[in-house]
Amino acid sequence: MKTIAFILLALSLVGCGTYVTKEEFAPNMYKDHPQTIVVLPPMNKSTSAEAKEYYTTTIAEPLTQSGYYVYPMEVVNDVLKQEGLYDTETMLAVPPQKFREFFGADAVLYLTILEWNTSYMITSGSVTVKVAYELKSTHTGDVIWFYDDAVTINTSGNSGNMGGWAGLLAQAITTAVKTAATDYIPVARQANEKILLAIPFGKYHKQYNADMKVKVEKKKALKPVEEKPQKGPS
Amino acid sequence: MNKTLLILGFAFLGFVGCQPPSTLFYWGNYSSTLYDYKKNPSDTTLSVHKTTLLDIMKKAPEKKMLVPPGVYAEYGYIMLKEGKENEGMEYLTKEEQSFPESKVFIQRIKDEYSRGKK
Image (cartoon, rainbow over all chains, first blue to last red; front, side, top):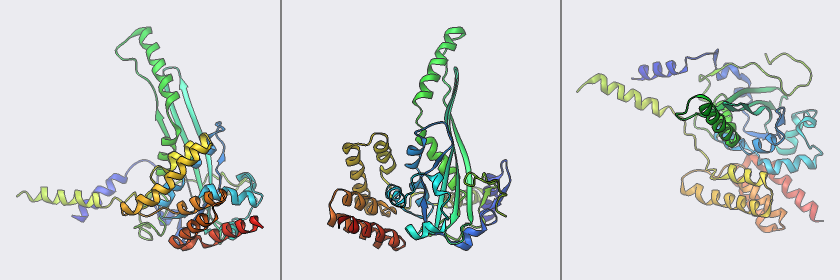
C-alpha cells in the first residue's frame, strides 16, 4: 500500500527543473533551527508604487502556517523607525545580528518584489506577481534559505460568438475590463504559497524536523539583497 | 471483493493523509481588513481591523485552532497608542504567555511605552 502511495507521490513530483531535498537545498535551516522571524518591509523593484504596502499584508499568514513565530509587521515597522530605519535599503547596511537585539529574532526575512504588473495587449492580458525571499540567521549572519517564484493569471477576454471586427472589439473590451479588475492580492498570495512550499517547516508545524526528505525545485540565488556581486551560498 | 480496488482505495486515503494541515492558526479576515486599512487609512478602516483582531481571539478556540503569532501584540499595541494602558499591557502580556519566544520584543514595546509616558 505504502509503496503505491510512494509511487504516486514520486510521479506527482516529476516535472521540469531539478529537484533536491529540503535538507540538501537549505542544510543550515536544520542546524540553525530558527523559530522566530522578523519580516522587513519589502524592497520594491517593480514599477508599481503601491505594491510594497499591499504585498506586506499577505506575508504573515502563510509564514506562520509554515510553523514560525512572525512578529506583527505593523508593530515592527514602528520599532524599526525608532531605530532610525525607514526603508529596507538602509536596513541592508545593518548586520542581521542587530535584529536579534531589537526583537529577539532568530532570523530576518528580506523580501523583494520583482514584478507586480499587468500586461495588456489589446485582446490578451495577464497579471503577474514575482517575489524573492531571502532568510538570514541573526546568529551567524548567513543566508540560510532563499527562494523566488512568479504567478501569472491570464485575463484575456473572449469575444462570445461574434466573429470579425465586432468579435475582436468585444474581445478587446472584455480583456480590458478583466485585466483592470484583477486584484493583485490573490495573485500575491498564490506566489507566497508556492514559495513557502520550499521552506523547512518551523516548530509549530506538524512536520517540523520531519520534512528533510521532501523534494523542492532547486533555485539559484537571485541575490536581491546584496548590492555587490557575489556567488551563491555554497 | 476486488482486492486491487481495495488496495487502491487505501493508497488514495494514504495520499490524502499526506496533505499537511494548512490551517494551524486561525487568521479570519486579517489580511483583508489590513489591506483595506492600508489602502484607505481612516478611523473606520482601523476600527474594522480591530474588530477582526478581536474576532480572531474569540473564534480561534471555537474552531480548535490557535490565535496566530502577533495578533494579541498588534491589538495591545493599538490599545497603547489609543492611551488604553491597562488593556494594552494585558494583551501584550497575553502575547508573551502564548508565545514565550516573543519576550524580548514584548518587553521592548512595554519599556518604550513607559519611557514615552515620562
